[in-house]
View (spheres, rainbow, N blue to C red):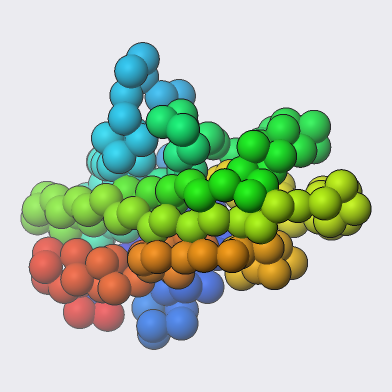
Length: 189
């Protein structure tokens, strides 16, 4: 059974490997990931995950396809990946000392076209960051390519004060739910 990961995220690849699933191929689809006007974060991550999976399934309909998308919500606003260090500073300053939510949408499609999707929520809060902690973290470049500009499994793990829900969701792929979705569409890796 061939599985294609519709994501270039090394974290998702590592997470899958940790449960014994190694995709045969990685294809990162080029889709518009801009949120729609007034779109909730739960709808957003699920829609993007489904668009990614559908785009890759069209290219390789004979394989199972797995796609995911992760974003952070604070105060009802969707926070995506920072593109520049100053944007990362602004995001982390907003998250500092506050509780926020991480959402991941997961979508799998079977070779027969059966589609299954799920949205997973994890609540967490970061400690109040000092200027020195923030500067040191930003200098590490670990924030690059990360939803909410931080990596729970990396250097910023020391900033996590509270977590409720799936740890692997915050990393970028909720493993329990992903495994259930894959099995639900017939994948036996």
